[in-house]
Length: 183
Image (cartoon, rainbow, N blue to C red):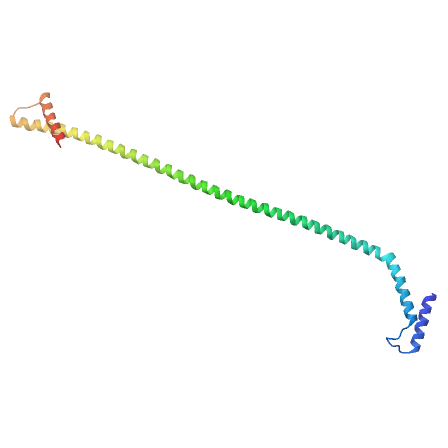
């Protein structure tokens, strides 16, 4: 209690002396300002600074850990991005390769189908030629038989006898064959 009284007394005396200049040194005020500062400094150092320093150091550790975690996550993200790009590139290459294989297989299948179609066309054409040839031969044989019959009928009319024997028939067939070979 002595000190606060003293301070009050010093303040009252200061007030009585009148207006003071800012360049005037007041040793009483100077002494008490330093004394309060030193006491406050030691009180703060003892009670306030350790918790403030602990909180600051803890915050620095947390920030350092968060920075390390961010760096680790950033590295993982880069690795994941590189892996993703590598996989996408591989998938594109695989898709391109599959597309090329599909095109090649389609072209090969097209060739096979075209060859099979050509073979079937040739087979159908050959069968048609054979059927036409067989039909022509059949028609020629029938035409010969009719020609033989007509020739025999015409000759019978000419000679008024019926030529029906096998020998007469062979004679006319030989004659028609010789005509077919000449033409």
